[in-house]
Image (cartoon, rainbow, N blue to C red; front, side, top):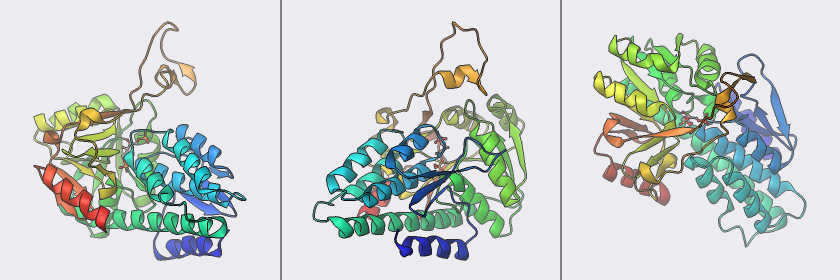
Length: 359
Ligand code: RUB
């Protein structure tokens, strides 16, 4: 392994206090297994891209930014394999892309790393993949810090923020991901904030991961079950809603963890501002609206079982759409690394998305 990769991570850690979901060490992709949080901090050490694909599918690493970075390091493993060719790296990319279809960052990251590799072979090929992976990790971290800074403007001193699922460092590059970057930046600016986190059935990202990560940041958190959010909003217990985003369509429709849409409806009914934190990398100009976003359907057993034990009669059916679509008209603002976009979104997103392509 290149000494450069080792130096890259030690520099990152020296400059910033980070909570890394994934990194590369001694020829292995290291992943903090999010299925074991908050009770165990167990790391997986993966040596083959297939293992990385399995870990993403099994949600041992999850969140739109983190799975993109895991995919990037998976491609690096593929590139380090003796005699690997651009064709084989592309095949590894195709395998990774199939693991989780909704979060566009994974798809875009794979495309960015595997494009135009044909002229390279041997060490030049490995080096090219390494350059691209390092640039992507650095860029994602820079985005988190910048969007956190812009997003903190919408947070008032003393605010209580309701969030859903987990959009934090472990779902991103390590500063605070999306939603929690905004909160981390607000706290760094001296604002006092509190969070209400919804547990996020069936996988419990809110209860297990958001609550744990906010604890690491020293931000007070109150847990609710998902069906309590209407009560919380009606009683004026939250000043704003802040969630992440797995894909933003060209018209501003948002795919995020299932349950987000209901929250946005209740927010509108109670005049509570609803924000998503995202980056230009999550804007998908090739998808005109939310209707065209592919929603990942997961195994119904994840709904029918809780901690491995059945919670319904054996004959019961179930569905598990992992995401839902929040229409643009319910979104008060889209927080990005270039500022907070306000509706109408179409032209602003086109500007942001195309600016990025040319940078
Ligand atoms: C994660 C999820 C998070 C988003 C947004 O889904 O929906 O809310 O990833 O957060 P899963 P971010 O747990 O199924 O991967 O924008 O920070 O990724």
